[in-house]
Length: 180
Image (cartoon, rainbow, N blue to C red; front, top):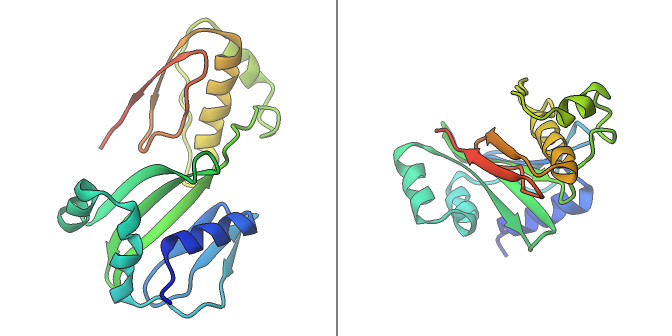
């Protein structure tokens, strides 16, 4: 039986992985506690990659794969069990995919061990917060923790610029600007 992408999602959740990497010519890889674990599965064949990703991409995303050679999106997996941000792209060997598993519960500023000053910043009546950094540096979780801190204490208007959108609303009104 051919593996399905959902089989890999289940395994990633069982391992507590933050990321899943699927690419042709290599076995699946899981990032657990910042370490890459290469599975002992067979290498994925280039021709099976499109079929592997088909269940999670809609018609517009299939067209984007054909015309732009990539899709960047997010979806809820098995209800609230997990949200998965994914980037499927064309590379020389064929389609590949990178999947980030977003924790179902938003972490607090304290649990992320962020500076206490961020709690004070999140309490201000207005302001502009810029959260920047390289990939995998915690930007999305920092945004989520700050938005959650504001949501729990105030009815505010929060605007985020993320692509794809990860911050979920609470008490505050959250507008999201998607950029391409």
